Image (tube, rainbow, N blue to C red; front, side, top):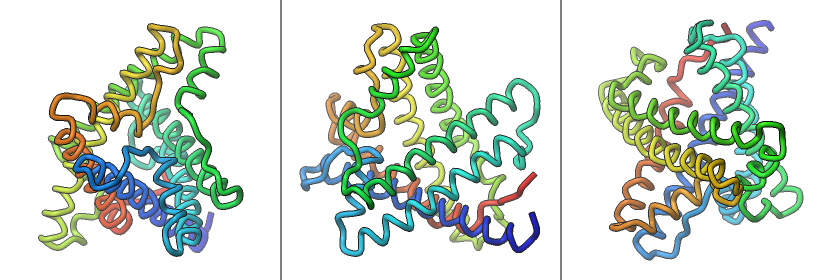
Length: 267
């Protein structure tokens, strides 16, 4: 791959960070409105894509989001295969790299959903997490795979909390190109955003563990169900509001900081 090809690929990947940020900001805004009775809803990624499509110029924006998500898919797969972040070949490194590839496939599915909404005016209904879980459970040792996946996702949530506390994510930023204000607010948004994602991952992982223990795929759920669960707790509106603001912060961090200052290498 020559430098010109890499240049276009890098631009596509940076568009991916913007697209991911738009999705998270949409989810967060809808959930904040729901938390404080302003007419929003606790929606997941599919609902966010549908909401984007319904806005003025939404079809055009959703098309850009879909293209960006393709770029993000490529980026995560490259991270897993070529290891530009030097995760390593030991057990810990391989787990991270496999996780990157899985995350890339997830973004690929999301990109497909965006293009499907554009072409069919339908983002798919129901509990898609439950559908995928049911399919997995039908495989040999499927229930064990679901349970292990749940444990891994909970582990990812814990690791996100660790990254937020230690600000480890700043090592992957071109901090030397950021001014003092960008650095301060970028780090704050990253910490708050990662903490909010940690909560969501923890809940989603718990859903999968419950699904495995009860052999019931309907126990599984995605971001939307996780937000609904928060809303149903004691002080639910406040919990939902805080986590939703964190998701908005993560969206801003992705769309503004990562899109401009993330180090992108190809191994």
